[in-house]
Image (tube, rainbow, N blue to C red; front, side, top):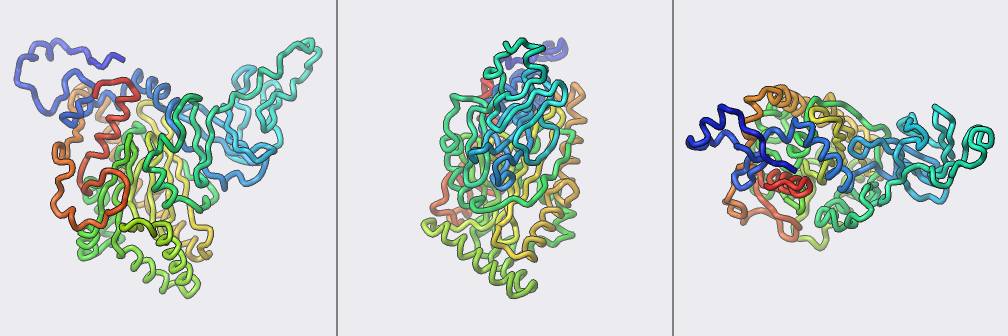
Length: 456
């Protein structure tokens, strides 16, 4: 891919001048300097290449097993911009198909979710069963003289579909590495932080006028924006006292980068979250107290062989587009899938997972917390979306595109963090760094560059 941006006459005339640190020059990325050219967020050619080299080659999240509990259950979603049907067949196997009739390309399934033994295209009536086979062709003898090769015209099936502790992943690349190899150490965290959960009914969906990478690199480890972007929410909800903030920072509120481009960010290993959850449960009644104590016992068992005990994390990312959030007995575990809809548009789908053992009162409290937080009308999500949209508006102008986006925080100081000797982090996989850093984001773009065949 051509990574050189043609210079204007004005740039060429001043090319011998001292380089201005605010500009990146002709490269798309220079991660040795920690800068990214804003063209990567708004260029149509780059976006089309992402669809092919990233969204057709990486493992993507489709949904959760509890969304299709029985044979015939289905839901529809996207892999990149490809619409797909996720359908449990008559033998109980989860399968995924391109939502496309091989006849003329109409969508076979028109609904978000449901249950069906077969699906019929609304255009010409071709019918397909749960194994993807074409079984019904109107006027087969009259129109085709019984010569249509129906066995070759089934639904196009996604070659790799895997359920990992309830999370359904898929990959268009039949030669891709296994899901476990792709996840690396992130699998260790997903198993412990998302295992044995069920999904709350319904998927929240909303669109943001923003490139998909804004949302994802923010979730990969950007704590720097929180005191500014979310100040009103912090003051309104009084999320933490000054003493609690100090204790969490001292005992461990750190970022964990996981090769090749994953992360778990804002990890807390202190006992503060557990204490707060128990205090909240006591205000809700004996049944909730019993549940919280049991939940904490089960969580402790998951980390019995790990000296450090993560009990909350603020956000994280499974590359390329799965944002993670949650923790604690009331935190649930949120998953946000950022579906690209063009260089400047993202459709975010929010899945809220919850402990099936939680009593009704606790489930209601968790659902309300989701709605008030990162959701489309929450106190947190709106702040981020407005920032992204203002950035996109700026990037439409030629001068804004020439200014580099900076990711150079603590560049050259990886591993050298004052106070880290007090962090409770023993036994946790991954590269551990401080809350305020852009190391996770640099690794996100480094892997992006590798997949895009771009020099970083």
